[in-house]
Image (cartoon, rainbow, N blue to C red):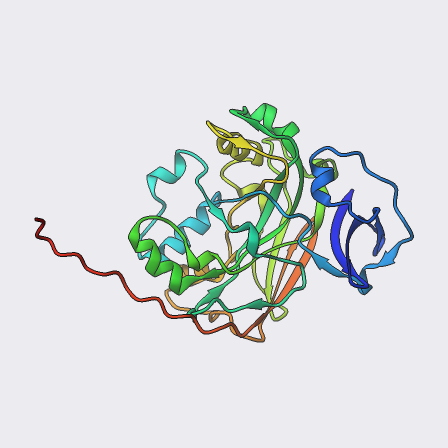
Length: 311
């Protein structure tokens, strides 16, 4: 089943996507309700997808973005932080940071350049959506807690990211302006035929900029399965229905920064207004967003330097 949230004739609705149409649920139904275990209601007359604006399929309580592709870590570390290779600590556990659930955009929405940035990048990812809450899960138990999957684009201002991560705290405004989620949420049962013998989903991933393919990979090249990621996220903490877990950016051109790190120069160039990024995931679908000019940053002064002498 494919569940979409959308705007049609001024109303926000959600429904089931079938054969290029969406069959709406009753007004007031949200995809998050179904993720949380509410029974699937009846549907109304179908509406062509071409006549609706697709929204992010749900409004998640939280977004955890992992980094599970070794090739991505190696390339981006070189271009963003100036380091070499993959840190030993990366192999210990599936690391993540919390992204901004309030900055999600739909499958075909425009994406503004973050204020103060001149080096915008995309990131090709798949996100799992939690269907059942829990804590201290095992990977085996975690499989029953995954409701479905969607395409995820973690837009990244690489110049802001590079500077702020020198503080040693993690991404801040470099990752805060926009993340694409869509085009819809595909329930986990639909993707089971793609699962390989090691438990990974063997889905083909493709990234295009202005119609030219710049990256391709397999989701099964992740260092951990989604079940292992969810188990780690729930360690000593509670995950909730609707929580989003990003796979992290795939390798082989899953973002421009990886290509820059491998090639030693910004080729292809950073994204600019007018560029369109299309990300496609086998078994799920495509999202396609166009970059537009953003706002100038409102000034915030630097920190006051405190005297070293104390009374």
